[in-house]
Length: 564
Image (tube, rainbow, N blue to C red; front, side, top):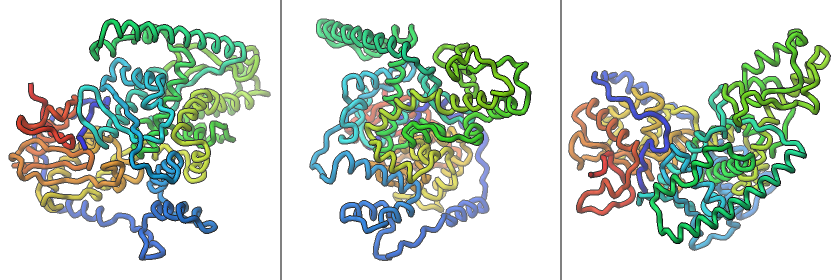
């Protein structure tokens, strides 16, 4: 259990400097409001048999072993909340990959990772893993216990795994031309032009030649490395990247990245870990429907891009089009994102064969609008979604994905993957527990929430990652916060009275626990938290913060910098 460096996986800026003025005492009235919100939590529906646990997921697992009566499984699934369905999916996947056997020792799915995001090192390492069939590219992706090791560190545990998911999420989001933001700030694959038969045959030949060249270069590189001996990590990170940055990556290489992203998302569902890739509802709907288009409505178009609906679809349907000189083509770019894709700002695609020579008229404009909407919703992302599904099926087989599609909506799948979109402070405080003699009425408890209440959403994300390894609460909110080995563990504030007064807090991220020393004032606590978050943003080894005469335990981290 180790506390990860809080924002090393986050592209966000460091926390703002502590305010000079003291935080005003909001008095007992605000405290009573908070307590009332906590008491107003939704009531749990009574379980039919008081002698049984109310955990419907556990009931489902037991009945799966013993055998379901007719309609019993469907009745249980209908009672599940979305948070329960997320747990059900993980257990269903475990049984799919392991059968009904419980091995004494499971194989290890080992992943080694760097923290360098700037030069694409994280994705480069993942591509290497997939090429060698190890780590994320392992054939038995769902059968091993995931273990993550960051280079140059000795940390291990659940929080390290959670931080790896955050770090890799950032690498995918920051990768140029892979994912683009929709107007609602969700993500979808960048548009990719369709390939005709001639282009496909040429691409297949080019890919085969590229694979042969790459294999030859790998053999030569391994031979050279064997002669030269081990190289430094910096040399390894720099090697081979210049050529990749200097020329556009091939279509096949880009699709391989989407396969890799699909494997990553499938592993996140299997591990019940929140990731930083919040897919747009339309992409989730395609994933749940095996990539098959549906009969869209204008509401679907509006959810994807309100400007497309307003300024193109409705305008063309309500006005004369012949003066505009349009033909049956559309630009290969996402107007909502405002950025060219695949390096082709002026490239267009034909919406039907010969579309470049077919003018849009009053008689055929309805067909043109329909083809534009279909291209934007389905055609532009068809190849990337197919690749995503190939990767996703490595962890979530197609039959289970079909089962899931009957249980959840597309927006639900986005929540299962990326968690709640906003941090609800009342929900956070309501599901916080205390330890070490700290009470909810103590000054430390009240001061802590006064400080967090003054934080921006970004600062709250940094604090949450510092204490738990994840920037967002999972679906279901803080009641479902993950701790050790994926089990639910509430956010915990623990009194650290043995620590010097006004010293920096210490975290046990695997169990979502923040140790708070005694503070002389609320301002002193704010300053200590600010320093701890700032120090946590750089990434350091547990051994660096252990005492001179104390070996690192591997389960905690102080908000202190490493010694010189």
